[in-house]
Amino acid sequence: MLETLTYIALVITVLITGYFALIFVRDPEAALDKATHRRELLPLVMTGRYIVVFLLALGVLLLNNVAVAAYFFAVCAFLGLYDGWIYRRRGYPHIKHTITGLLALGAMCLSLLALTSSGDAV
Image (cartoon, rainbow, N blue to C red):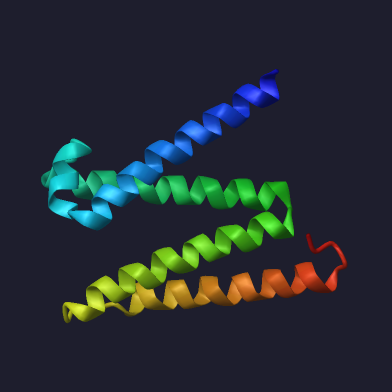
């Protein structure tokens, strides 16, 4: 029963975050209003986001699961490369974001190699 409720909570989380991802992709300015974000508070919001990524990384480390690590690195690669792309195409310095994305991509490849060579591949 509790496992089912946990699964339902995850489905709800995926739906809510997926909805906000979609509206931000379609119209970032309107999405800021819809999500009730204030532009002037963005530095504080980013602080929270970095804390969250740190806590997720810590959780993945403590889980000690190569498949979960590969997924986490794939998500981090997207995050870094996407941010780097946003800054680069507008002519802003992007190398810190791009390098972070590339490092995460390398870590993902290493994790996938470890996963497939261990015989534990799904």
